[in-house]
Image 1: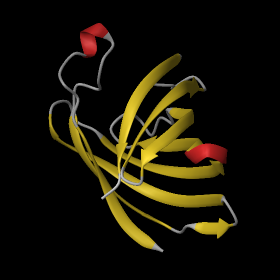
Image 2: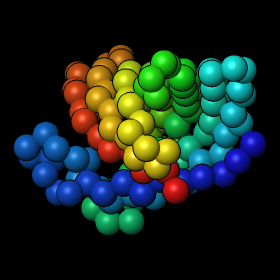
Image 3: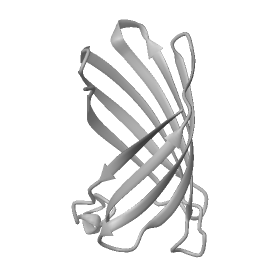
Image 4: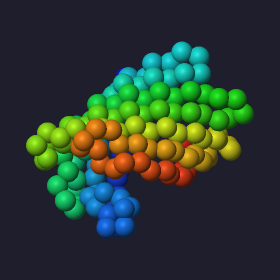
Length: 134
């Protein structure tokens, strides 16, 4: 069991479809269940804005990470948040990710995202990212 957090910077470009328009902090608590090269993490995360439009959400998440050959990994992250500022809307999303570690502390990944249900925050998206382990 552990406690972590995320720092989310909205970058103020929501009119271009980039970012949320709200800078947020998001502490979370979860439990990692490990068997071989598979990790399953059920967790609860709370999002609060500190600059920008009001965001107060509590997300229930289930993350699955699978180690793959040649330092690759796959990840599935299902999020079911409750939006307390928007009549308790449930803007559910899912993310599928494929990444590769080049060193023990540096890797890159691509991901696909999809919004689920009537309150979805977006229809779909793709991303590219960098992972740093320290």
